[in-house]
Length: 535
Ligand SMILES: C[S@@+](CC[C@H](N)C(=O)[O-])C[C@H]1O[C@@H](n2cnc3c(N)ncnc32)[C@H](O)[C@@H]1O
Image (tube, rainbow, N blue to C red; front, top):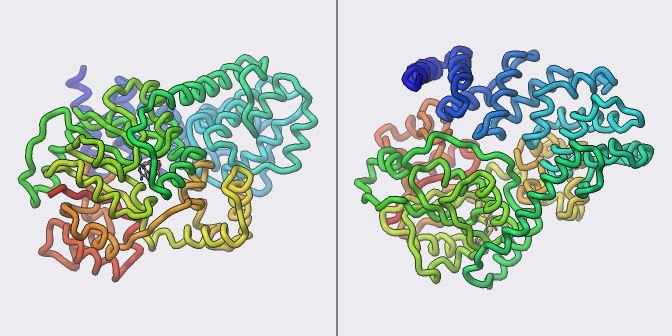
C-alpha cells in the first residue's frame, strides 16, 4: 500500500513540476483519500489550492478546499483566501443587489465550506467580511429557524478568531437589543463580543464557549509554568513586552505540518559554496529569540527532524499561548522561557542554530540584540533573520502617520475605528486599497503589531550591511523559499534580476551586489528573510 502511495506521489510531483495543476490536484487528493496523514501530499495540495482563483464558483475546488481544511496539519492560513474567494463567488457577495435573505442564510448555514472557513480561519477578504457583517445582523431575529444556528455559531467562532475586530454599529446594537435573552439571543451576542461560560443553555454554544474558556484558562495557568530567566531591565524591552502582554503576536489557530526534514543537511547543501560546515551532535539545539505565541518555534520543533527548541520572549502571555498549543498539539521537544535577548549571554548556554523573524527591528538597538545572539550560537551555526523593509512598509508608515495625526488608540475600539476608517477610504485611497491586503490587518493583535507598534526600525540592504558589519556572521542568502525547498531562480523576480546583472556570482550571496540590485528596483523586496552562518 505504502509503495503504491509512493508511486502515486511521484506521479503527482511530476504533474506538479510540469505545472499540470489540475492533474496534480487530483493525484494529491487521491493519495489523501487513501491516507489522510500523508503530509507530503497535503502540503503541496494546499500550495496549489492557495493559488487557485476562478472567474466563477468552482464546485470541485470548493470541495477540495473544504476537505483540506478538515485535515490536521493543513496550512489553513494558506487556504483562507481561496476559500473566501470561492464563497464570495458562490453567494455573489460583490453584487450590491445581493441581500442576505432567508433562503441565502439557510443555504449558508448548510454549507460545509462556509462553516469551516468561518470556524477555522481568520478571514482576510473585505468583500466577504462586509457581506458577512450584513448576514450577521440578518441572523439576529426573533423566532429564527433552528437551521440558522450552525451559521451563528460559526460566526461566533470567527469573531473569536479575529478578536472581535469586525465593525459593529447602532443597527447591530438595535438588532441584538430586540432579541431578548433566550439561548439563541446569547448565541447571537457571541457573534459580537465574548460570552461567558454558563451564559447559554444552547448545548452547541455552551460547548464552544466552554472550549474557549477552557483554552483561556489553560493559557493563564501556563503563565505560571514559564520560568523567567532574568528580570526585564531594558526600558524599550519593557515597553515592547507590555504591548505583547496585551496583544500577543501572532494570533494563530492551526499549525502547518510538513514531513520533518534535517535542516542542517538541507542548508549545508543549499549553501555548499560557503562550506564545509561542521557536523553537530543531535538533537540540534535551536534557539528562537522573540518566539511570540509559538507558531514559528512550534513549526520548527515539529517540522525539523531531531531538534530541541528553546523559545524565549519578553511576553509571558505570548509564551503561555505557545506552551498551551504545544501541549494541545503533543509537541514535546520545545521549552519556553521569559528572557530579554540582551540577557542571552548571561545565561551560560549555547545553541547550534537560531531563527528570529520579526524581532530585532523591535529592539532599541537591533545590533546589540544580534551581537547577543552571536555570543550564544557556536561557530558553524546557521542563523535565520527576518526584518522589515523600508520600501515595502511605506504604506504602513503612512498608516502610522494617520494614527498619530488623528489620535487612534491601540485598544479594541481604537483599532476598530481605525480599520473602519481605512476601509471607508477616510484615510485616503492608498490605505484603503493596500492595507487590507496585509494579512495582519485582520485580527486585533495582528493589526496592533502591524500599525500601532511602540518601536520599529525598517531596513534597506545598505542598512542590513551596516547591521551585520563587524559581527561574526557571514551572509549566505535571502530566503525566497516556499516550504523548505529552495526557490527556483526563474520563479523569483529578485533572483532573476541578480542572475542577469551578476551572471558570474552564482551563489547570490554578495550583499554589495544585492544593494545595487535593490537600488535599481526597490520593489523587488517585500522585507528581508535571510540566512547567515556564525563564523
Ligand atoms: C512581531 S513578534 C514576532 C514573533 C515571532 N518571531 C513570529 O515571527 O511569529 C515580535 C516578538 O519579539 C519579542 N521581542 C521583542 N524584543 C525582544 C527582546 N529584546 N527579547 C526577547 N523578545 C523580544 C516580542 O515580545 C514579540 O513577541
